[in-house]
Length: 114
Image (cartoon, rainbow, N blue to C red; front, side):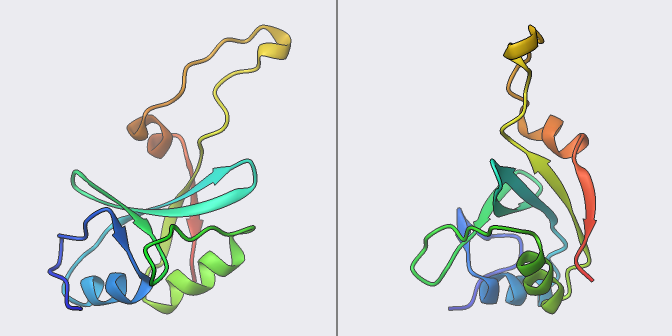
């Protein structure tokens, strides 16, 4: 299945992502942590795409090593690690709000895939 660069849809396989990169896609890669489970989101302009398997199920990981190996193998060099499960600490009275996508990317940690 050929995909056009910059038109990834809601889900993309590693192979489709690799093809899009070879056609000129230069995405912002987000590795999102949710209580120790990681997912990969691909951002390009206003699009937000989940990395999935061949059946369309979102890929989940129990660490960042496999993510580094997979994304590095297709030429991606870095991304942003974000945490969607941290917005305050009610145990000590620190209130918070759930961060939006832009806030998570702005305050994430840069990580390398090579």
